[in-house]
Length: 342
Length: 111
Image (cartoon, rainbow over all chains, first blue to last red; front, side, top):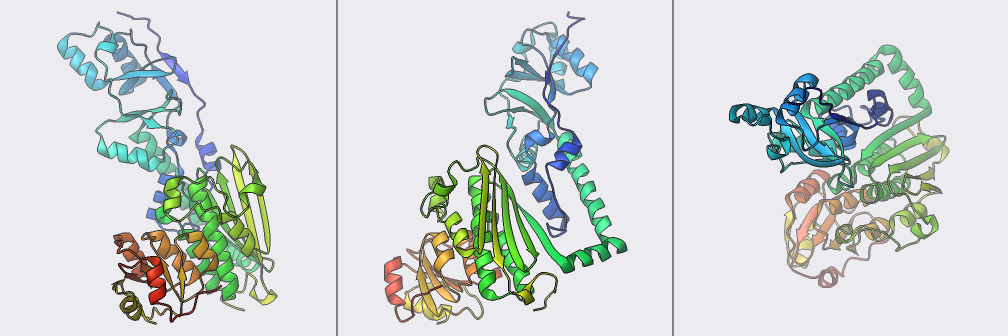
């Protein structure tokens, strides 16, 4: 019996709720104010690593089932991973303890009785993936591994719910502020000077590709902006949306109508572009075969966007981000504020 | 040329009708970025790309009729998207070249 047994604690850097929020700029209004859509966006935008617990209590393989029981009880948790030097060997849950008490093997090493065929998640998976796992399996928690298959965290349904509820309450507060009379007045005033809206673009979700570009087209048409300009903006928006979707780890597309111009800015997190000049040439692309079979990835995205824009800027840092901005000049009468006018 | 007339020319069938969808020119392309860059409004797009993104591109460039070649099936999400956006879809057993020849009375789409 190991009365004084000390569990190892994996000390990952815990992201605070505020940090999560700061890195996830969401605008409920930009998402159309529809709550189910907001939830979908959150589930896609958030990754498992954003909400998992990074401080994981672990035990070694030689610890007894009794040790595991004590750790579960002392820490009020329902499962403890069996791990050494970051490598995950198994997991002991309350169920295994009940079986141990019943079968009389509480003094035996946990490696003999732990669950070994584990279902695990990867830190970079969207939260929607984790929810699907919770639905498909009866487990209360999943260990989370990094790309080197090392244990970096653990996620429970409670962690997912806590993150979603927190984010939804933030969105509701934002909406309340926006719908108050003063805020509405300020917004109206701001609207007369410029218009801004942003859309989240999810990595590899081609089923929604074009969603933002289409909405942008609708907004510009509503403002009676010249059809040929609308088309050019729509082409750039679509190309940049597809680029975020197929090349990055996700990002946002921002529409800004101001100062006699329309701008589309695509910001993404991702691999970045090593050689911008090369990437902007027609026919150069790093897209995979699947993307190409869908009719994309022919290396025309950046060059098409550049061709239709009056001003084109691109900035990128390898391994971090890419920002592309396309600016379109508007004849004076067509500028932002005049809702429906011109 | 209405979607029904396009279907008759290419020996195909209107899979998704759309009220008022009329083609006044033709563009042939399987590369959606190329279609984005060059297809004009109110054209018939002749392609083998039988998926939802084709509808998204057509919506953005204002293409009103899609001709899917080689009798490729129209997946449900594509059909729903096309119906919602008012884009007609015609399926034909012809290749892109044969379909283009069959529609040769329409001018090439230019932008």
